[in-house]
Image (cartoon, rainbow, N blue to C red; front, side, top):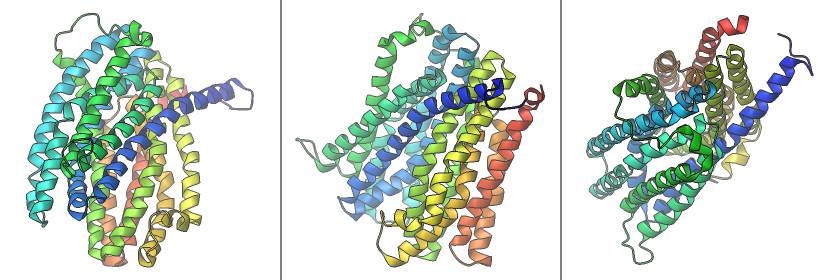
Length: 454
């Protein structure tokens, strides 16, 4: 099919680009708001001294991978809802949502138990007793927010599956404001509240998640745009078969997200072998690239929606177009941060530090990061397209192979044997992301081959 200007193919592509960007814009901003909560916690803790900052950092190191795992599991809700909408079965969304909420309750219990048990990790770390005590209090307070987090995940991904991404953005920024205010009150003891320090940061997060979940639930219940979804047609009995279908798609997503996050976490730990300046420079580069990564993440979430709705319509050509459009947009958009990091990394580093040794290392890391911006954009949007197809198990295996069989071993070998410099670890990251991008895109083209040749 040709794509000349003004042809039907060109008009279809133009429509798809606009639709994808309209969905992606609010999601990108929402992702930035979620990252902003982590930044706020760190800034607030830093003003309380080293012990509280270290406690929040260590607690977050335990919380974040587990958080991302359960977030990934709940991502499966988006393609399920999108396919129902695409098939014209909007009234089936309500009954499915009820089953998803049952599942969320079970997930929140498992999450709570994991957090309580994972606190034992802090006892194995070589840190002072006061940091360990503060870190445990922070984690145990955060654990109280797990039921609200799972409910918010369900409602968030239901909205995304419905192509309603603005509510997600609005409540993300509402959460950012509430989190900052709660941090200020509970950590510093303002307005008559006790000064809880790091523990207060945990309670602030739990409170924020609860307000976000309750607010989004009330919004959905009272907004006329959701009335045709059959949300309150009567309480449905638990249906384990639907839970298992959702977990069949969601667990591989959760594992994939966890493996990618833990890869970057382990590289950060290995960087400590090269000294404090290397750790600091690495943190500067990773922090900035995490921010720019939110752009393709938003595009990937939008791609999941568009592909899922095309699957529901039985539109094979639309599946192909939606997936390829999302991947292409991410590739083009990531050109801009790649150019900034590659040509003017000193502009970025100046925002973080003026220490010469740290700045020099950070600039070198950012130049390397410029190389994986494209691969990162390609792999995350290809994953999003595959989620829209509910094709997640092979994607999980690809992620494991790329990150843990290629990226981490190669980076360790280059960093400690061949180059004997921290840059070797980053070359491993680049290789892992490149392999993931190539294989995930090949997987998408393989599973859509019939529609592509139709």
